[in-house]
Image 1 (cartoon, rainbow, N blue to C red):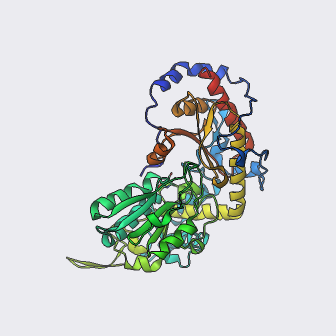
Image 2: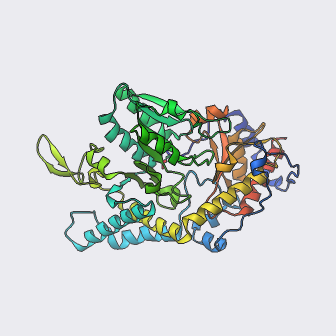
Length: 461
Ligand code: PLP
């Protein structure tokens, strides 16, 4: 699954309007911001005056760690609000990757020379950092993958294809990223198992009231997103784990958005699998993680075949390496894993609790500020959401909105956010989404609001 590079369907005609009028937006950049206070579409829960959040760290100093943030786009200081797609990288991570290549580069495992040992130590110590970060009981539970997508596919192939058949059920939700839909659709198609969906309530949280109708004796695996990449809604995974356990089903948690934003403890969650991506949590692209219970990994078939994952190879058959290497065929993304280790060091230094608090406050503040814009619809469930704010403004296609904001140096995402079933629940083809990380400021949110108001004025609103 590609990262969220979509721009949505149907963004055609209005897009041309912008292309023709783009030159005008610069001269309109001082249009006044609306002061009309409209109630938010969700009423009271977030209609409180929290004011701009105060970061628990020296924000200027933190931002200096991220070279990409100090750039200008179209002559304006960059406001990077596409963190749900990928995060920016601090110097410390970039330096760790460079240092690895300068001082330790060799292939891992099996090398009998000093440099190879250095590479192996760097790679394996990153694995231990990951294990500690999510409180895995055993470092052998950590498998390096290319990202969340590959981690979920690994489970669908290496576990699903050997354990499911007709009469079995896979349960996911209507809030999933395509990465947590398509591998299960393929698995259902190939095994004859049924794919079922937990529905949403009217306020776009998971509808858990009839859970026993969905989690039944036929359910073999429940796979769900921890934090929605569209709404930022954090799902009550522990409650669902308990229900799944009661019927003997396994549970996979898509942690692509949760692991970067708040402390995730696999022991506390009680899940069997957790998938996440390094690039959304300050790390390089090309590395992600599958956490899995060791007894499951021992019993599962390999995913990919090749070097590294074998113990012995005969002409017709082979035996497998120990876990976790049984699931890491070929030369892994060594430098990227090392970079992920450095990213974890950085996050630990700031503190995941403090990151979670600040993200929540930023999101609340952005709801307050944006809800004052006339004709805006903000989606999601305010009390349980963090880090992400999807919206639409009447009469402006999200694709156009993103293009107009880009002219102001503001990077947001527009499209279906790799969640087409969810967009259908919302009754829209696409939204614009601003998503935040701990290096964002309240001034950037003010600039976003100003940019939206300018877009409205520009489009003749
Ligand atoms: N799951 C969620 C909730 C996501 O937000 C994403 C990416 O945006 C993914 C899965 C896929 O991640 P990756 O593309 O890094 O594999």
